[in-house]
Image (cartoon, rainbow, N blue to C red; front, top):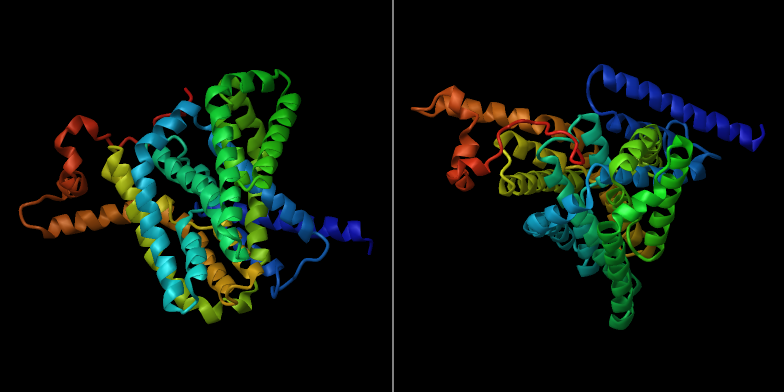
Length: 427
């Protein structure tokens, strides 16, 4: 059979399977991401039906999927929103790094892998998956929630931190000297800062340049601009996801609204391809030997992520339910963790690091959508149950226990009432 015919059959089968899995997930009202990953395992190395000719196209589609997920997330917020959130949430970013990087480093040292592997595994456990979380927020209808800007701020801080972290890891893995590593780091920081400056100061001019009454032209210009900026950012050692996100931040007004409407179907298609691609490159046979340490690390860092989100939302004056939602949303790990582990595997630092990272990410990328949905209701039920057992407290006040115990609640007007949706930030 001709290679192009095989490609069409394989890729068509993937898209059809994703559509059916998405319908199944929608019927039972849960995120389709875990099903997409399982589909990738079935079509990947060691799976039931390994792919052949369509794998390269799926890889490119996966990169586009991450870029579109971050672009759409950026379209939800203005440059002023970004700057104000970063200024207020940088302590949460520091706490996030400490709570979630240290368990990975400690695990690598306990396994006897050495300091370089410890730095690598610290990055794997630190960075949440912006792609997965963006998809989950959309699936759960939480893009307009009060806690979402807090989640977004932490994700942006993590993604921007990659502009510092990735050059350092690359230099360590390559055994580069201090001078070479410093030059790479300076270039990465300079590019990230320049793109952010352009987005904040010249966003209106960019929107005016992109604006068009013709949907076809608007779609082509926005998509082309995003891919160019993402590619240039990645070429200069900055995350393509950061570049795409900042393009979304730079666009505002009617341009943002129109682009959001036009790009939503493309985002859903390529995002699904991204999750399939993640599973394609995982050999199911490599996971069992490292399952126990991966599971232990996943449990610890899921709890530390929930604590990070809860504390960050508490600082922002979000009510107890929003705090739990913020914490549960941050649990998923994904694309950055795999990229970091891949660098170490390519450099031959530690053979077991790749399977451990893969098993760890698979656990949390499946668990993440579940914690995003169920952390808040489970925490509320537990609080109410504890409140009923405590003498002198009624069940009606039990659900407010966390807010009452919050030191910041001394000034009641600073605490946001638990109204989930506040509308799109641009309106």
